[in-house]
Image (tube, rainbow, N blue to C red; front, side, top):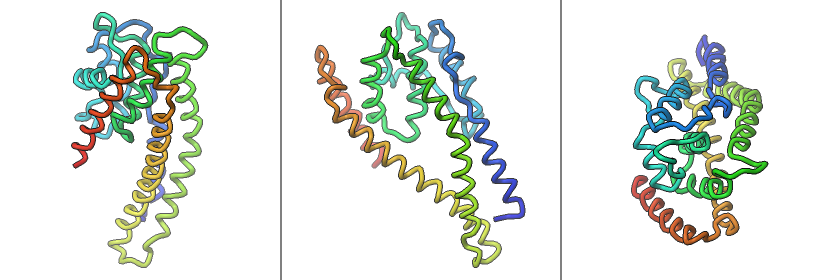
Amino acid sequence: MTINSEDLLNSILASLDRVDYINANDIPNIDMYMDQVTTFMDKRLRSSVRYPDEDKILTKTMINNYAKNNLLPPPEKKKYNKEHILIMLFIYYFKTVMSINDIQTLLNPLTDKFFGKDGDFTLEKLYTEAVNAEKDEIEALKKDITSKYKLSEQMFNDAAKQDAAFLQKFAFILLLAIDVYVKKLLIQKMVDEVAKDETLFADKKGRGKDREKDKAKTRDKDREKSK
């Protein structure tokens, strides 16, 4: 691509090591007001955003919208506990590739079954195991990215010198984008399978019917935004 192509690749790979995950043990075991929640999330995830001086990690409006769309259980006396924070983290990671309606499909049965419940399986255990598994996948991800980068370097070598560098970067981005696209399709298929599982959406005191109405409204909003 360029004389410094290896430096660029190394910089990309190094950035993966700087991706910050909030460990469940780092979440305070005390109930927090909304301002405290947004401050905590911002402090821990600020380094992962594209524009640190502009991007919003979590705002009061976002939290209120999550509650309004039945993504987040209501706070107790205006305070949010550790499980609330975990749900917000799930939303944070999901929302870049999933619609609000799809996130709702996944989180509703999760919160119904495990939020505020005692037992061997907890939301904290689910979050911890998933995050630890993802950390273990970083090296495999680095190899995949390196492979795509090297492949893009071999493309468009017959183009004019002033064009080759751009075309090769374009090809690298396209390879990554196609990978994300395919995985997004897989996510959508899996969410649809979850939605079909009637055992996860039993009508408990009318909540099931109300939830379906809410999800239909959310789908309509998502479609309007996409037009």
